[in-house]
Image 1 (cartoon, rainbow, N blue to C red):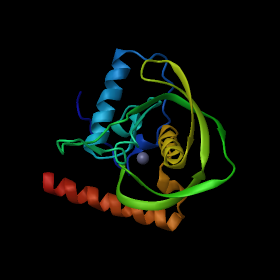
Image 2 (cartoon, rainbow, N blue to C red; image 1 turned 180 degrees about the vertical axis):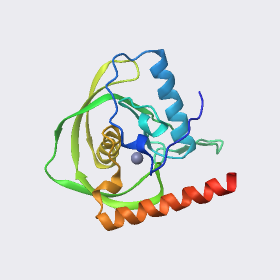
Image 3 (cartoon, rainbow, N blue to C red; image 1 turned 90 degrees about the vertical axis):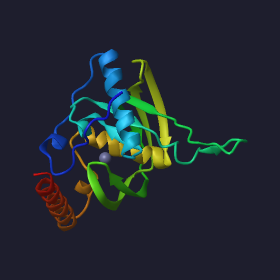
Length: 185
Ligand code: ZN
């Protein structure tokens, strides 16, 4: 496994529409392994392939690792990891009522905002082994999947904010990027 670089806004690649995957093969599994490692290292709970510059309809997520940790008898603290892989995810059905979460994004570092999304959604997808699966998601899982699926369409959560707020965030991020470049040079 290897860490990949996470692209941050503003970046045109993040606005690309990702392509359907034709076959889940070893190369794709390697990409998913790398994405998961990159996501854990960030740390984050979801990552779409386009965020590491690969325009394929692939998502990795783990919303379990933060609240399923357990302490063993010898006091070793173990974080149970529950990775999820979604290839070519499609929404079959979504609820009419929304829920609101404060969202952040590894491609929009340091910025958070409340976003309304359908509270429940029914998704079909291919798993890590290319097997067709379905999942009925609600709560944080539903929000997280929809956030990641937006990435496949080139959409970021800041697109749901007012124009003023979005412009402010992009300006801030551009400024941060410039500062980083100056230090490196
Ligand atoms: Zn994101």
